[in-house]
Length: 317
Length: 274
Image (cartoon, rainbow over all chains, first blue to last red; front, side, top):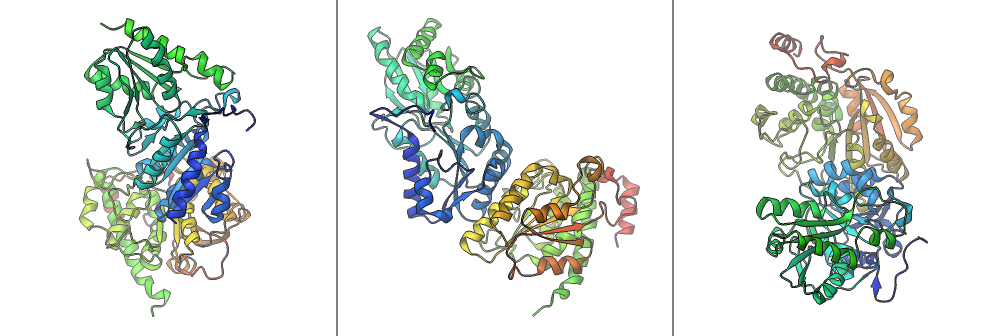
C-alpha cells in the first residue's frame, strides 16, 4: 500500500521472508495451503497464487469463515496457513481462534500480517496492538513474534513442523538482520547482548531498537542486557527470571502496553522475584501519525528505551 | 446389497433408544437441552445408522464421512448417537456433566472420539464444515461432510459468510441440515428475527435446497443417503421438526430448550417414549 514506510537499504520487510518460506514449504509438502480474506497482495502471496492456484483459498472479506475454513482444512488433512491483516484476523475472528483453533486444538497456522501499528495513519481500527493480550490466554496456541527475516523463516518452518495451532506475527516494519541467533525454538530466548545492570526484554520489531539503545547506555556506564524473547507463548520464564536478577527490567513491544509481553513478564516476576519493570508499548487507541512518529512518541526508539532503562535503574532497591 | 429402506427398523430402534437415554442423562444431571435433542434425534439417528460411512474403531480415518454438530448444546442426541455407534462405551454416558467428565455440556474432540470440532458458540459448525469440504474438494476425495445447525442459530452472520463460500466454490460434497423447529431459546424464530423464506434465501446463495419432514426416517434417508452424483452445488436439507418431539408436554414449548424434568415428568416421558 502507498502509505507503507519505504524499505531503506539494509532493512527488510519480513513479509518477503514469509512468502518465500511458504512457497518452499508448499513445494515440499502438498498438504500446505493458504487461506486469505482477499489479502493476497497485503500477504505478499502473489507468487504463491501463481505457483499453486488451487491451493490459495480466498474466502473473500469474511474473517470468521477464513479462520473456520482453516480449522476445517486441518481436519481434512491439510496444513493451512491462514493469512490476513492482523487486526481483522484476530479481532473479527477471535471466537473462531478460541473455539475452532485453540480449544479444538487443531493444526492450523494463523499469520497476522502487518501487525502492531504498521498501518500508521490509517488509525486504531487498522492497528493490531491488542492481539498479544487477546491471544496470550488461549491455551494450546503458540504465539511467535519474529524479529528479522531469518527468524521469520525459522518461525514459519517451526509452525509447519509443529502439530497444533500457532499464531505468527509478520511485520511490514523495516528491520535489520540481527545476525546469527542460534537454533530456533519457541520458549527459548536469545541473549543478544550481555549486561548485569538491567535487562531489556524485547519482541519482534523492537529487538533491534533495544540493541541500538544498549550501545549509548554502555557509554554512560550502564551495562544493559538485551534479550530477544522470540515467542510470547510459550514464554521463556527462566530467561525472564534470570534477567530479573539484574534488579530491573524494561519490556518493549509493538503492542498494547498492557496484557502482552509486559503483562506476561510482570506476572512472572511478581510470582517469583519482584523487581521494577518499566513497560514500553502503546497505551491504547493512539492519535493519528506515521509509524515512525508513533514509535518515537511512545518511546519505542533507542532514546525512549534508554530513558526507560534509566527509570528502571532509578527504581532499583 | 442392502436397500435404503433396510435401515429403517434400525434407525427407528436407535432413535427411540437415543431419546430415552438422552432424557435420562438430562434428568440425572439436571442439566442439558432436551428440547433440541428431541427435535434433532431422527435426523442424527438417520445419519449415524443409515448414511455416514465411518469406522468407530478408527475415528481418525482420513477417508471417513464427517459429521459436524453445530448445535453443540444438543449433547444428549450427539453423545447417545456416538455411544450407540460404538465410538466409546455406553457407560461413559453415566458421567454426563460430572466433574472432569469427557462429556462436557458442549462436545470436545480432544476427549471424545467421533467429535470433529468443538462447538457450543453458535454459527461455528457450518464454516468449519465448509473448510472440511474444501479439503475433500481439493483432493477430489469421495467422502462427504454433513453439518447440522439449529434454525435460530442461522441468525449468526458467520453462517451466511460460509454459505456464500460454499456456494461460490460449488461444494457438492457438503450437506447442511437445518433443524427447523421454529423455536429458539426464548421465543419463536419468526418473532425473534425471522428466517423465512429460508429455502429461497439459501437457494439464492447457490445451494440446492430440499425441505423434508425431519421426523420421517424414510424421507430423511432418501435425501441424505442419495449419492452426490451429478449434483454441482452444496445441498441444504431444511428438516421441519418439533422441539421436544416425542413427549407430549414438551412438544413445541420453548421452555424445554434447556428445561430439565422432575421425577414425575421423567416417568411420564418414559411412558410415552416407547
